[in-house]
Image 1 (cartoon, helix red, strand yellow):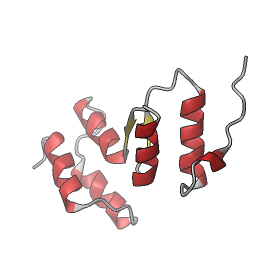
Image 2 (cartoon, rainbow, N blue to C red):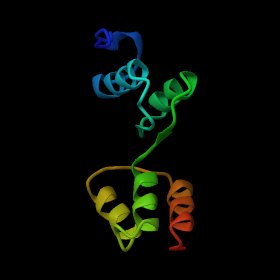
Image 3 (cartoon, one colour):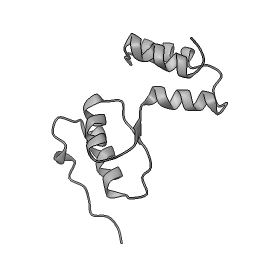
Image 4 (tube, rainbow, N blue to C red):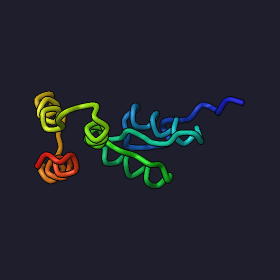
Length: 100
């Protein structure tokens, strides 16, 4: 039986993409991990007991699995496109990737 449609308005303050992502994950018990960079979205994911990661976490995992050779160059390209991470987060990500 299909899951009922989720009302994305249930997550006030989130954009449509974040709300839809969370709604899908909540409505599908087989969802394992939510990709969420928005801090408010992460807070909602945590409240619903959903595992989540951000794009930087995906890059670290990709490097550890040998899918990318470097995380730093990807972060530089993201920053050039207006994707923002704090210096503390960048330092932590580079440390996890073994690039500090």
